[in-house]
Amino acid sequence: MKLGILGGSFNPIHTGHLLIAEHVRDHLKLDQIDFIPAKIPPHKDLASDTSDEDRFNMVQLAVEDNPYFKASRTEIERGGISYTIDTIHQTMRDRDIEDKVYLIIGGDLIKDIYKWKGYQELITLAQIVVVSREGDLAENYLPDYPFIQSVETVPFYVTSTLVRERVMEGKSIKYLVPEQVENYIYLHHLYQRELLT
Image (cartoon, rainbow, N blue to C red; front, side, top):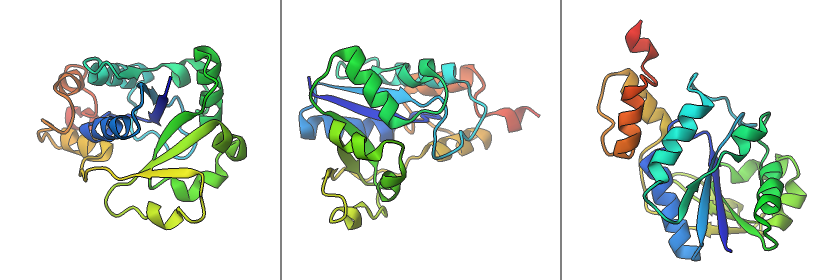
């Protein structure tokens, strides 16, 4: 099985995440991509008090109609800091995978990958697939990191920060997130704390 892994805070998941995943899946002919919300991201703070369960539920809603996508609770259930190497080990063990998995990361992360826990082992267990947003300088790092594969993706201008800010400002998020995720955000009053006080 050619398995892709796309981790993140997904706070919330948005159409950019889905576009990237579908583009990489199609380009590399992956059989499946697991979307794995982080319990505690090691390199950044979660930007709001949205629960793990809410973030997972939004991911599940966003991917449920795509047979190639799956929401995974791996990092949430494991608890603690969500180190990628631990997730790769657990995924390979739980799924009995012997081939490399495809770790999909943003171009903004590649410059610090050598600082990641278990970096040397990680690059032997996973094919690192770098996708770039416009303005990322991932291509500059390719000569220094011959173990990565770069995939060009369609430009998009959606970020989780933008979605949260628009909700807090009472602005529309239609088409920035899947409709099911939009409904979930409003039903559960996520990212609206400032509006409610």
